[in-house]
Image (cartoon, rainbow, N blue to C red; front, side):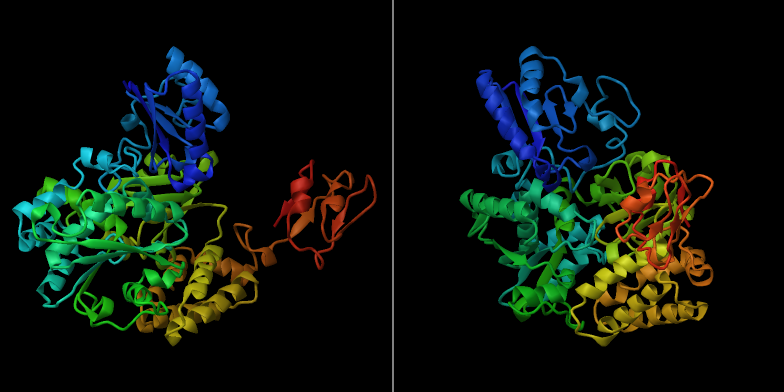
Length: 596
């Protein structure tokens, strides 16, 4: 008889740190101790608290272990599972807490203000076992719509719920379904957009890895609502765990009669196929994605017509991203009013964010829309490591903007983010502190979009490259104030004339940093200095003669031999040869080298 369940995170983050090896090691040690019939090891999806991985929770007591290693398996089995003693050194503690046994997981700072809807099963069930999904009302929503509701009823519920697309555009999901449902066609399609390409974003990947059946169920519901019999999941090939679990889930759903012909004896049939993307960021744009599925180069098309009218293979097509779909079964089961009760007037429900950058609790969070940026970063995220000062948060990835400290108390929703020069995007949130250069940040994201441009339209292909050249000119210390005005003018031209959302939003990081951090741009241009000390060509390393003891360590560390001086005498740096690597400063034991 099983008395204990050990849930071990099997998401990509913990997996890369060896969590599956830990699960194997635990199974071996449990067998040695004769506990294999009493303690069950369950490989789950992401728990969310990636910073503390690999993580595991022991139920029914709810003990949360963090930073577990393979070498810990014998001690865990001997102490916890045999003797009932918690292994104190592995216990998860809040930052600065010394308590031996933490409060319930739901009471910790990271989890207590979260509201998990899209992530409800992630870290809770074995994603490769359909019976665990069914045990938590899995496929009950599909059964309900096929036996109790008309397609019109389903669309009405979706419209009343207020669910908006979680992939970036924020278009009302029910309205999109209604457009496709009204189009008469012999074939229609449902596409799940799992081509998550934003740097620092891993929301969709985590849902697919931790709860793949929720996406399959939602796609079948969407298919019933619009009259589609076929679905495609367009997933990045760089997500091997997600792809594996999706294919397992599809096979299980077919075996149980939950995909295929005549589901629930309703006469409705629906099938799903996984298609792999090659990692092109532009294929996250719906028309480029469609073109790729059709076997062509992933390039966007002019709209209208929109996919709901003329999409995949010229047929009406609905495209929803992973997070959008993950909400749908719960909306059907709990009702539109339940979902609409969360969030703000125009942005209902919850939103998943991937927290990264200069933040204590790197990981995945789901909060009600309307939560402030301050709550996300400081209450849930734990603030800036080492007590550093918050400078900005980038939302929306390369398509979004940088939000400064003055907007920390902004309630996060679609409209508020747009108003302050950013956007919701798919949900990446990268936090920056005073050591980040905002000009360099803008340059980083623009460099990404230049590489990812499909090249189809001139404003994006040429315009973004010219923008990047202007930013290079600024970070090299060769720009003028007139260049800033020219750059802003070019940004607005690209936004107005690019063919698709990739080009139209590419200037956002530049415009938002110009808006809120223009003083940093001016410092680069006028003073020829990078205030954050990041832009190498504007840096200068100097040796303080009153502190230098002539130990020669800096000269020995220098890879280009640009430091000269005699033993026990102050040294000097030849600025014309210095490559600004900082090796001298890192190696100096007397704090005699400064960066200016």
